[in-house]
Image (cartoon, rainbow over all chains, first blue to last red; front, side):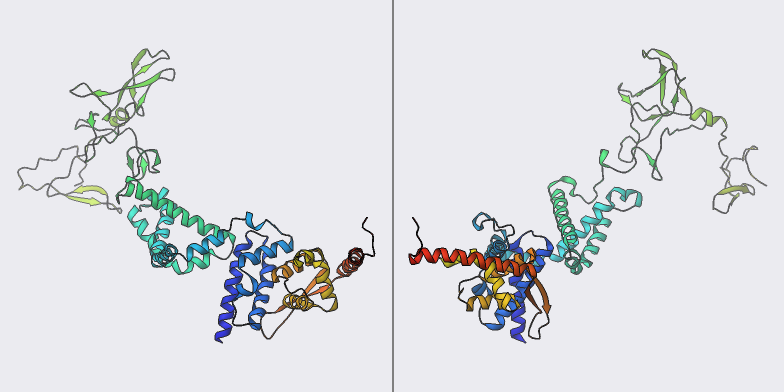
Length: 345
Length: 110
């Protein structure tokens, strides 16, 4: 049994080396040649179990060359062929090759996790903002998937040329992405896409949709000039020439005129925007119409807030529907509701 | 003189001749060629020749199950193979007569 196993292993190894040395041949030709060789090598070892196949048949490279030469296939002179397989074998048996092989074995699970994380990140990254994924969650989920598929990865990518090609491409892509991350300042966990590379909406977004022409209104239901900033002091909408809520007649063009701060500098995120209408020679013909705010404000009545002591009625969606009851008379600070308020008694 | 160089010219005919006596598998053909005197012939050379002759239509093949190991692929001559062997025998006889005549001094080389 032990002899049979040794024979099988030796034959398989020799056939594999010859296959590699045969290089790129039509699959049918190669398969037929290797079938013959497998049968032949087994017969040789059955006759002389103690010898090495390479002693009897020559090195795999010599065997492959002789085989191709006799078969009249791709008979390139031996000394003109770049014997990659021989170099690879030499490397495998070197100190560096042994170290590399050991490291590859030890780090295989880590590499599998990195591969999974990279692939998921590449696939989902363009949509991750819409889907609500963070970079960290993508990497963790992808890493877990890669690690779980680790033991099956070789099976999945070694069956045919397509699988092998995909396997190589995935490993190369993983290496490229990791190299890019390591050598760029984008390594931070909280990396946020910027500029045109971002797939997220440009400008100010509400529920994932870009919004324009935000209006601010004062207590008198009239638009007021406000500047909008985020918590970091950055302008929320900085388009200096936004004309989204300015209009002119069809023969004129809108030119937005920025506000000026106390230092005389243009401040671009102040709303409502103001501008002028110009003709084709850029001669001002009048003030641009603010076709948003004013028109909608005309029909809008500011609410009268329910007072302490009154009870609000909510609709089926939990939204305000009405107010009932009287204000708490014991609270002297509560003003009397306006007669025009929409209270329901 | 290196006999392998001489063998190259007649290897196809030698393989066809061996198989014409009896169908055989690769290792068997190698052994019979060696037993016949081609002791230096390479295994891969014979397999490559078998492959080439098979692809040219001179040989046919069939698989025979074996209890001792992998199934064996036997080669046999086709009609085209027989014709090729006959032509090779004729050419070889003519060629060897000329060479023998020169070697024996019975044929003028002037």
